[in-house]
Image (cartoon, rainbow, N blue to C red; front, side):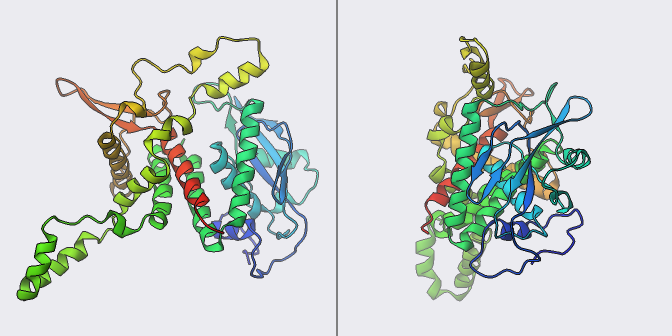
Length: 387
């Protein structure tokens, strides 16, 4: 049972329990139809029907400056807890964010969810929860094409259906990873390093379930001969035992992270799963204007690197460094070396060492690439789960 008063704080375990009907009876305060809210960063003009819930078209609220809010009422499942209706909305916002790549939020309390037809005061309160900058530097494109909207709806519906069908223990693991991606998107504007940490951690969290330690265990080439010598020398035997314990002490987490990506989101498909930064605008303009020559917005830039330009050792080194940069942020607060939180280059940023001659540099995976890898690899593992 969830807390009787959530007091404007989220415990996501409560939301995980609220999102999927459990075979075990979980007490609730009041069952029956209820309503929550989905606050998107785009305008939703049409009804979205999902398994067990319905998302209504957006109500747009105009805020100060160039900010707006897009508020959609959600008809919750009939088996939910009406007293804590917002818990379902929070979980749904994480799932929709993961499926679409668009940041969504919900309410942290249920008192705004009680009205079937929210008043202007309720709309005003809801609008404060997720203001969206819709013009100017750093703005979010809030006008999506029908193609994009249909794609987002279908992929979200498929994800919800799969989350309802996997075994419950796997469902918990998946929802925790989905929440990490959600938190990454929530925190990206405030701290890029934290957003980077969270998306890498989302990949790592599933890699620990998908890739066994023994698959990536690294052995010294002389270990077999050492094992033969150990029975004849007690001191050497103790030293070998200590070496083996230290060798796998970190659980080979970086190696499993890299292996997981190469298995479920290899570099050969990155060009398929990472959308071009200009594609959303091209799709929208194609539907709403008479412009026909829009290829300039999605053309590859002449200096831009693509995954097909790199060999396997370069890909491995880059993935290894992405994990290392995550660790640097955890242990000493050091930000990743990226110069732009949102790059117009589709896949990579290049870190240039201007102090050396000839000038040297290394490629860094864009945040957008890491998000695409997280989404595709986690979905790939989810599809491999047998009901």
